[in-house]
Length: 412
Ligand code: SR1
Ligand code: MG
Image 1 (spheres, rainbow, N blue to C red):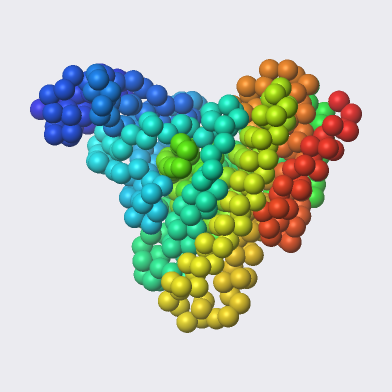
Image 2 (tube, rainbow, N blue to C red; image 1 turned 45 degrees about the vertical axis):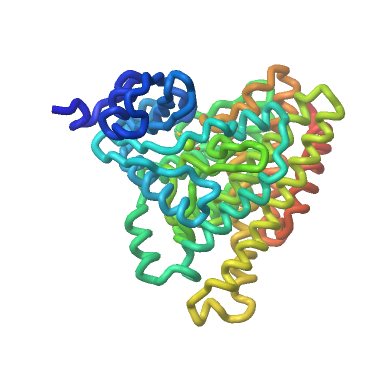
């Protein structure tokens, strides 16, 4: 009897045995090495490779408890991840890894290793630039988000997907961590960087109009079943090398507002920009990197709109949705949600429990305070002016620069 007939939390040697049993032809008899390389909050990620490093794959394994919090978490996230990756790869083949196996018993997704790419978050922290990132990520988002809307899918297929990807456990995390705790500290778990406490409490806990807008965005997140969204498209879910971009980790996927994904990408580019603003000592490198981030933000938003409009106009099969002017209205609406989501994502990473390395790696307290303020002030503009303030990528760049100037003027 196989030891993999009922679920248990695997270790590295289990992963090697697992691969040998489940995919016997992949490595043949070659001696194998395995390392657990995950650094996310939820799952375990094993890289299994031949000793000479010529062949490898990834086993992503879900335990019944979330990795960082140790709270119970439904393993259905693993099924969702496998099924979403297959759909996304079909829609955007160049930007999604190949799936070799999904095993609902051990809750494992075995997939192509994109180890020749680097995690985008770490690449950004090292202030590296990538010439095709904006075009690639815009293409991924336009393809996966537009081609899963009511404008393109048949009504029957859309409803089938909606049922298939109900994701209560992961949505609950987002609803609490992104849309509640940062404003009301409802769980009492927020982690406030002490030297910035007064500023954060005033700007976030004390701003009733911000709470009202954040509540509207929470309502949109919970009720707008627009697209099959990735649901956690931060820079840790994106892998980059020059000329190529791959998207992983869609365990938070569900039918939600398309702008949530686009806003997440923008928010994590803002973290990269603000990190360089306070940590990069080489002025030339700082200028080059920040200029690249600005272009990437601008192009990501504008190319997403351009590519989405092209898809909607050429592939829409619904007579009403094909009406002149409808696609433009639809995309403007997504841009409002994009700005709102960029803002809520920035805020929750500054004050909430799930931080980002871009912030945490800043050692000097004054630099960290400044970085947090840049992110929060930019975020508040994204949220408060989202109705018509962020219809072009260049508006984000202007708001980030403005936030950086204002942050330097705020009394410490
Ligand atoms: C407890 S999970 C914390 C965060 O990690 C994931 O990547 C999501 O962003 C989630 O909000
Ligand atoms: Mg993840």
